[in-house]
Length: 378
Image (cartoon, rainbow, N blue to C red):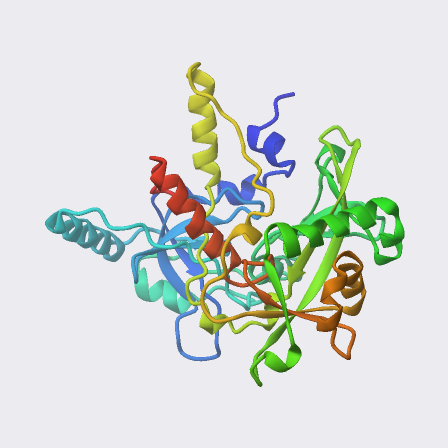
């Protein structure tokens, strides 16, 4: 039996009903959510291509502001003369300007509310008076699914009642990965006393405090009054090889970026490679014998990136603070009355809002200096 390459690569099934619900160039009305005002709840869009994610979303070209958005809830409409005139006008403007427009950022946010019982017929008829397509009521099962689609932005991994690793996707489906893809298992705090866990925690703290000097201990009184101090969390996991055999224990100290003010960091963009770009490169490499394909794992990528902007402080909880003091007794004077150590972040800790953007900026400059070029499609 033949299996689609993307299924082998990701371990997740494909919902063809969504992947093939529209075709290239189709005119669709994409659901935009509602705020209980007279604002239209759908937007006129043109469908270029599927997003290639687990939920079966599509990348759409929004006619109103000429940007790309990612949507799951949409309705294919009859292409009216009004839509064709709008597209022809856009093409004419591009020809006159004689320049290629920069690809707009893919809007990652999804509408917050998706349990509407019907599509917005008024908006569709206003843009498409010739269409006689009427929206049918959505049953309760589909309403629940669409609610899960739009509220969850990314696929998250969670442990189900049976203990098997499940991937909860924006399509509302639980995709159980094959055993060979289950390569990480979280270790509870009760098991931190194991020798392997202790070694992993000490290795992580040694890297942060000594090798990379990502954290600098400060007195609580030295922190400006009113400054938000982030909490920290230590995660310990068991890592397994692709064949399922145990590899090692790994620890990661992360900052709780949920306490940061997102408005202070408007530019958090950290583009990643698109699925179609990756498979295009792999397809070319398979037919070009002189191409060499390899991957690089940069250890502690974020914590090698210098922190920029306003100072960010993090509190290390008492249990982890004791690990630090056992390794670095000279920091005993920095221990506060609550049993915690307070640190200034010198490097972009995992969990910080701006960490991925700072890392992307650093690695991009480095690769461009080596002669690499950015892909215009990702």
